[in-house]
Length: 305
Image 1: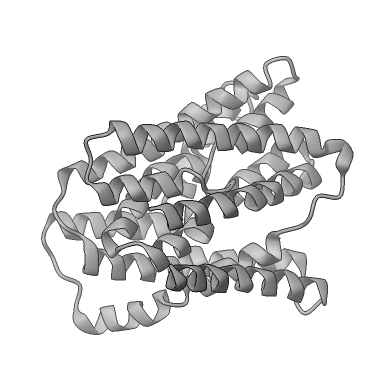
Image 2: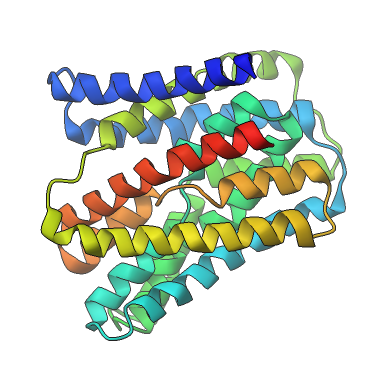
């Protein structure tokens, strides 16, 4: 218990450090973007390579995590539509974009990496494959072609696949899946490098979270953000109970899925939300509130599991 609390305290301390560096103007609020890019394009892929090497085992049921990562996004898009059913089309799209999408790589993965087994991290990566299909453009493409009806269909489809396969993390996941299915081993010198870089994933990711976080200031709009975030939490609780008690999956897969479904709003969802409404302030407020509520829930689950 003491070791778990010590590791959790260290991750929180890193986030506090990032927030303090922003407040003392050592870093700027916009610096979370390059930090997030470092995570998604370097430290997370390296951590995933190491986890697959250490923890992958041929478990066919593992691929259900990909399906549930995808279906979880679809279900929460529907929840967002119901929540905003009496609002304008742009408001509906904003709610749908923010009720769906999971920030797994830059927020949840450090906790999985620090507290659970390498196989749990493999399961989290698999869930993130399904999640990435929607987060990197799938949700926006769906909303654009139906609710918002923007642009040409061909352009939207091409843009979606371009965004999806330009994600280094997504490409790394797919490559690792292929190598695992073919029983091919990654050379030891490569693993030595990825292990050292991947070990810094938790630090860089939680520093980015601290820089991105902002305490709610616009109390008049807090209700909108709170309704979205509480819907996410309720949805995550339903998913977690279903995953843990109803699915005939190995315990480690169920543990990982319980934690990742409480991940806060993804950075890409926030960016697309700003594009939909031009309201970056509300997107930032919703994202910060999501982090504030997700953190204690994930810590509680880590202690419980």
